[in-house]
Length: 188
Image 1 (cartoon, rainbow, N blue to C red):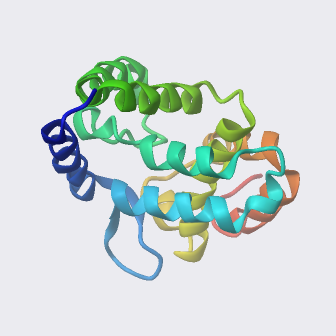
Image 2 (cartoon, one colour):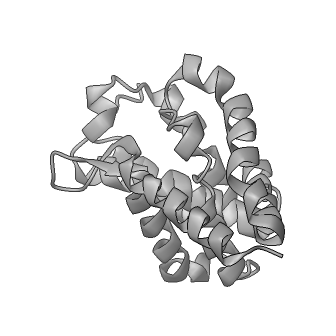
Image 3 (cartoon, rainbow, N blue to C red):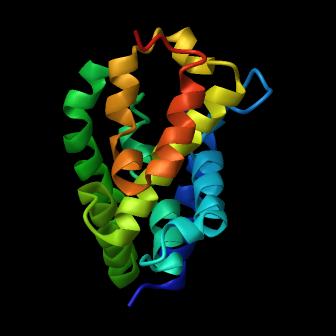
């Protein structure tokens, strides 16, 4: 059983999510979002977009979305289009997961299981969560008139690869995002 002190220690640790800067900027601001802001946004999106995921357990998906980036406390955020950084991402995140989840006992094991499930992207909850995780920065870049796509010269093939979980999840959402992304990325 997890002690009160272990729960407090975990609470203190997860506060560091507020310090992990991502590349995506907040809509309308010249400030990058943090992992905490990203996780909050997609967790709330799970409720708002729930009609697109009738077979998914909303509570499980929401907790999965809140936990999916916790490993970045130790592994750091890897930019989605950083090909070199993504080569070592999996190993860095596995090591970070041990450090973050193990001290929390059974609760940590459950969160780690959700994190792994999200990463495997096979259950209805993971597919829904992954689609939202990919959609949120795309929405931000669209409403920031190309945002980090333009800043980092993101190519159409890179974006299409990144959008695969959305395409596999819901074609209506995928088509909406793709049509709007074409305003800022050359697909010719």
